[in-house]
Length: 407
Length: 211
Image (cartoon, rainbow over all chains, first blue to last red; front, top):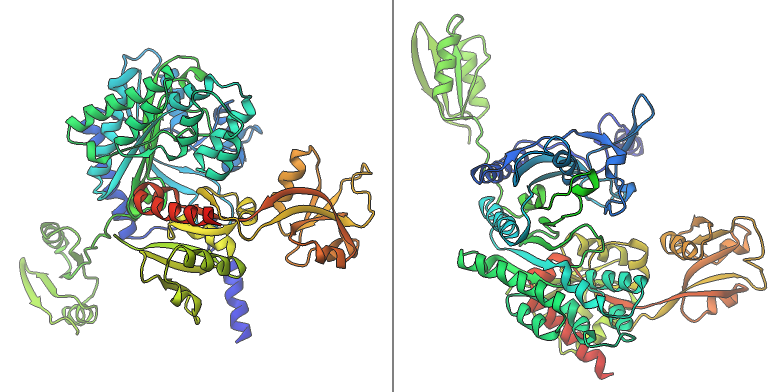
């Protein structure tokens, strides 16, 4: 007994058998599910005038090192090229596209509508059960400043999840200016703002109340309510009435405008708001949004306006976009039924062409060629495999044998 | 309305949680005689209680298989995961502290200090905030032994009464931070089941305020 156990452990330790931490082989139904969701989304993107870009799987580390980079360096999978330069496996889809917008598409007519359907790699802590190998599918709308650009992005987000077949889902909107407006007038230091942000983001009500106690001023009450300011349309009215800060009110009005337009377009039921969506990173510059689907424990879609990013690469262009975490989305959809072949086609030597013609005329995936060398062997093999029909192709005639599948 | 799942840390936090639930008017009969079952229903509230170890509570909540969890702040600080931490439940109160052999001058040397702990991330964070680089040794239990055997210069651990430290000739030289049980919520669940979750949070809060 002990010997067998040790052998098993050794097999587990073998890097020949295991896939690297956070990755796995995906077979059959998993592929069909991923591909069909990707297909539904990308077909919507194409329908709406978005064009695909494919960026390199491998990039220089430097591309992702910027002052406002939200990616911790330990989450990137790094290695060194022949010249000793540091490379990473693509950890994010938007940054390479920002580079394209500032270089190859520098002088292209705006707005540019781009989409991608790629994988990224993020290194997680060991044994957390999180995937490192993440399929992302999303859009970037470049050179579309203002309300109509944001409306298009949100409408795309709603319709993308609908097209993918998500049932009960919300796209939740927030705006960075709401919080920025509130704290602008307060006499508090940068560190306190950082702490407040992280408390709101984590909805750490306890610590937040502790920190906010020391803050006074006309907007203190509004700040106190901020972590609770999430939910339906009514949140916007509440937020508006809680403050008379111009910037904060403008942010609420902006969200309202987006909401009304989308509501009139029959998409209001999918929208929610969280004014506490403040992002501990300074990556987004205006509207931010996230998608939640019933059945997924994590965010399924994330996006927003990032007007500063492309400027980092030398061309100021406003931009907005979002990414869908494909596998998280797939996990909340009903599983697909796989078609398994129930028909064998046996052919006599010289009749391959007829056999292939027959194979291609049958419904997709339902039939396969039999490799047996005699008719009787073909019949017994098919029977044993639980196959329902056997076609015999010989002398330019096709005969069908009905088999009673084994019970 | 579907039953949400609440993961509760087994042991003392579970006992304290049951006391809180009873004050909230939740029927805890099944919870109080659990037998070997690990998941229990509450007959008069749409909630199921999952009993788990602290770090696992965090794992279940983070993956969203449990919408809510009750877990010590010590475990939260060590695991550094992302979810909403909405309420300090007050019970399970103790503190993180740095302790050394009585009379030992921990800071009186340029040598890199060696610290034994069950909480390497908390320890790393604490000394980082002091601008100090220390070498950390992870110990699984009874950390007090490490300085006694000469393995480390000090320990970082949770301290409740300080009796164990005293009995082993150790003393606290730095208080790091207080810890207590927290109610945590999965990010997506908070958004998808807002009414139900806010109702539970408010009930907890009201009951805690009555004390």
